[in-house]
Image (cartoon, rainbow, N blue to C red; front, side):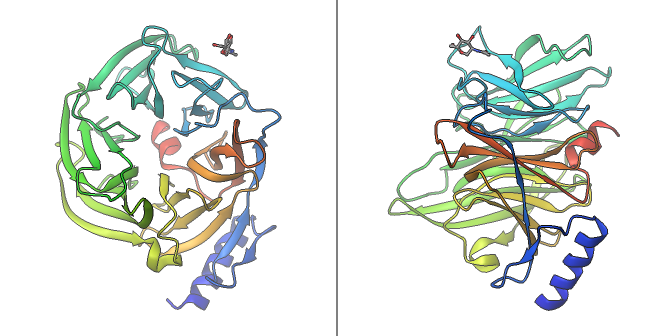
Amino acid sequence: MNTATAFVAALLLALRAGSVAGSAPDAARSVPVFEAVPYVTAETSMFGPLIEGAAVDKSGSFYAVNFNDTKAATGMAFPAQRLLYRDKAEPRSWFNAIRFNVDAAGVQEAYLGDVENHRVVRVRDPGNNGRFAHSETFCASPDMLQPNDLAIAHSSHRLFLSGMRFTQDSVVGDGDLWTCDALGKAKKLGSFRRTNGIELSPDEKTLYVSEASNRGGNVVSNVILAFDVDVHSGDISGKRVFADFATIDGSGANDVDGMRADAHGNLYVARWGAGKIAKLSSAGALVAYIRLPSIDEVTNLELAGPRGTDLFAVGACKSDPQKGCIDTYSAPAQGRAFSNLHA
Ligand SMILES: *[C@@H]1O[C@H](CO)[C@@H](O)[C@H](O)[C@H]1NC(C)=O
């Protein structure tokens, strides 16, 4: 498809979704640019600047980390701001990721990635009343770099974990990929340059992981790798480049941060430092941008809300870098996570 055809196709999609208002073509790339609106602002925020780990639960409530500017606390942000879970037993915990799951017994649980203690904590809501009380270390390894973000396979309840460290000149080993089975057994899947965003396709046959490289302290490249994955065994194979931001839009120096798929397999990608989300098709083509009014350093996003179609993007506020902001945009399709929690 040439770019003009792609633009018309994207515009028709947007029209069908009734969300073309506020869109304008980006002259350079010929894809629609949608404008998000502020949801939680510097004035109203109860989150700190390390806001990350965007997540949705079964009811469509939206969550993030760094509640109350506390590394060991996570909070709900939609429909209301309140504490989800604060680790009082280990106050040095630093949560950076959240994923919800409904277990075989129908109990909702949340997995929290703790970059400081190289583990995933599981908190459970045995009464199914929104009180996530019971917590335990679910999986851990001192050899994990972090984990930074998590993806969960609906059909096997297996977790995939990305981690990274920021060095002057990236080498293989500055990023890693792990998996934890449903019983919490951790296994390393590989070493990479700086791996960060992680997501599965809706059919759970493809695992996406971002990989960035630094040279002389500068970010010089950002790609999204794809692997064939067996979510039951955890094995990955067939590593390939799914998207390279140097060729997509010349933004290889902007880090990929969180990534979330919708139920159709489109991938929404946080473009840290660029104040926008890039929407890629399941073939890796740029489909649209969503511009964020309150945030430049966007860390993550999720599709939440009562129908699972409200995109919430998080990051430090432009107007007050000591606060965490959230912008929202009405997307045409349900998120993969929300749709899985209802399957
Ligand atoms: C926020 O943290 C402060 C300092 O630890 C604490 O006193 C306060 O109760 C917390 N507020 C909320 C809403 O959790």
